[in-house]
Image 1 (cartoon, rainbow, N blue to C red):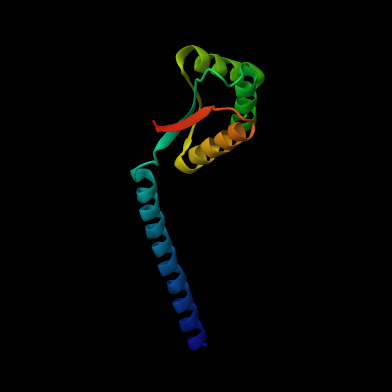
Image 2: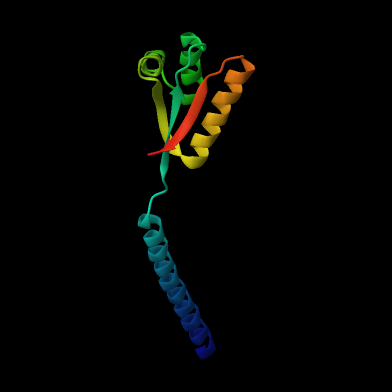
Length: 119
């Protein structure tokens, strides 16, 4: 019976040690996570004299999930100010969106430019 009690104590102690290690690991992980957030990038469309406004609106709706009214406002910003910001994303997502927009525009025969800039 003493052996059983001794084994139980070891098991309980092992669990306690594992819990302490887990708590320390969690604290270290939280310190690393809160240290510095990843940089964000804004994805913007640039004005040109050839891409139709309706095509720009359709691109904004399709790739940036904007409603028609918001997409129209962004398109007008592109038209009037030379640039319109479609959204702010992490680097990988911003890069992917730029590639999708450029590929779609080229396939449709339009010279629409899409860029990403660090915020």
